[in-house]
Image (cartoon, rainbow, N blue to C red; front, side, top):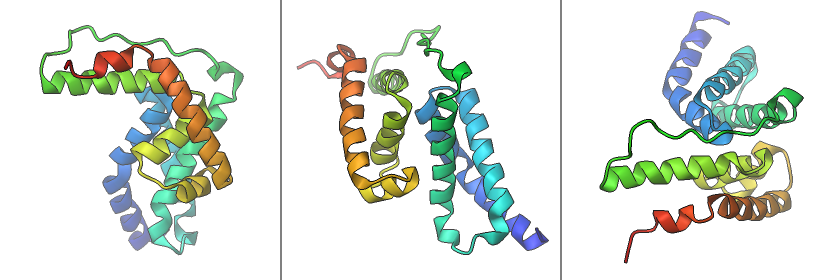
Length: 172
């Protein structure tokens, strides 16, 4: 790559690094793995940077790389271990901030229990804000598959959250 391409890539990387890392975390539930997955996606993007003509499609390319890496990794035998919920060492503070932290922790813990492909659909649809067609393009599947995986994923998330949903609702 020439100096101009390197500069463009560096600017894109700096602007999108944290967003890609957050997406990876929501899909895998572990910050260390999220760092690895984001790095893998950016390395793949760097390799193809000169060949990419539509710079407006960069987010979609990186997002698709992360999703595929998460799903591929979940198929490897050494990654089939179950997540262990991590309980914070310090109590969650009272008030709105504490409620937001508790809600986020419950959501992330619930997402960890959802199968990888369904988790990817939920993250793309509801946390990344993609519509059905865009999520289908990222996942390389039909819109019908996205709809069915969304339905199954929401059902799995509800089951995983169980009573935690009631605990998260404000008292009347």
